[in-house]
Image (cartoon, rainbow, N blue to C red):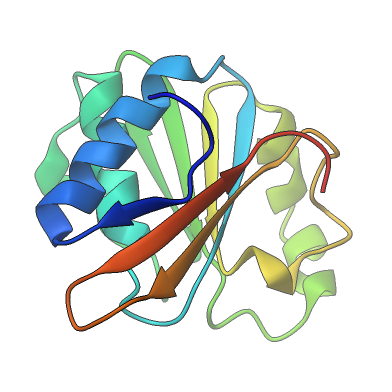
Length: 145
């Protein structure tokens, strides 16, 4: 993948493929914060990322909306957070979830805006915007928030 975008995905398959390509440039220990409306493609991108890592059963990759965290074991470990239902940032810390941000592997956080004080400075932002019914703009910002 060249550059940070913005990229345009015209289908779920293209969003998935972008995630698969994106992970190839990520070192272990990366934290990725995902931003975008419901249905914008965050989980689809993460499913592609998991495929790119390899040795992860893609049928197990789903948004952990009610449990907050799914862990996928493959060639690297993926920590997949969905914080949509997190009422307060303090609950993220109280549950000990912040430890996963330094656990190695790849940490993916949907609805990361709910934990602004927990995100490390090296967090990568992935922002999804609707362009149409199937089309999405995906902007990737590496480095400091």
